[in-house]
Length: 104
Image (cartoon, rainbow, N blue to C red):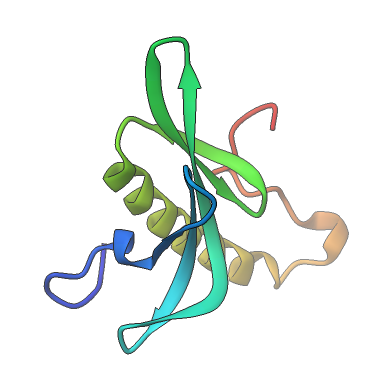
C-alpha cells in the first residue's frame, strides 16, 4: 500500500448512509468525487463483516473496516492496471478481471 506517512485508505471513506462507505479518490489530502469502491457492512446471523464492491460487483469480504478499506484501495489499483493491459486487445479478446468474486 502506498501513500504518504500516516496515510491509510480509510481516510478516503465517506459514510452515507450508515453502514455504507463510499471510497473516493484523494488529491493533495482532499477527497474528490471519483468513487473507486464501496464498502458495505454485512451481517450473517451473529457475524458482522464488510463487503468490498468494485465496479458494482463483489470483490471480497473482510472482518474489519480497516482491512476492507485496504482491500478496496489495493483492488482498485490492480483493476486499473489490468484495464490498461486489456486496452491493448480487441474487445472480443478481453477477459474479465480475476479479482471479482465467482458467481457475482
